[in-house]
Image 1 (tube, rainbow, N blue to C red):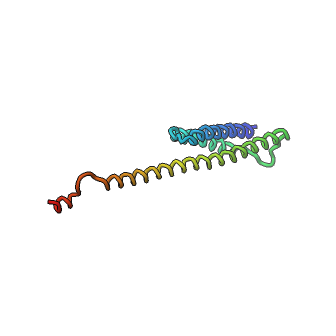
Image 2: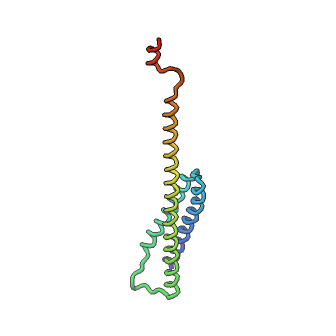
Image 3: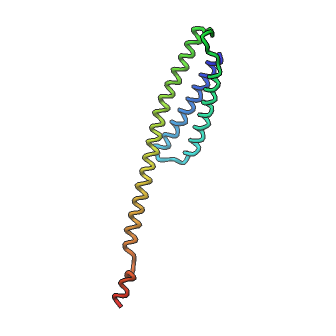
Length: 138
């Protein structure tokens, strides 16, 4: 049945998506964001493929007049359960990814604030007398 084939293909791409997230999460946890652009591009391609599969599933005739064997029904249920499992895990991963990115962003902001404070402190200790005081001393 075409529906089962499409559901299995969808689960295949969800598994790829999940694996990609897992791999990149390890990098993010080590503050390695070098592959961020590639990561998002790969995710986009997988999402495009999933959207295509969803469009193909919508085209399938699943009206009440279709006879489906119990074995096929069980396969469809299994595919849907697998899909739901992947979707739940992917959503949890996305929260972790967002958290890693937010932590890195906060660290960069703190670092920039420290640099700004350091520059301000250094500018307060310029060498030599201030120009306005030169006239007073002369």
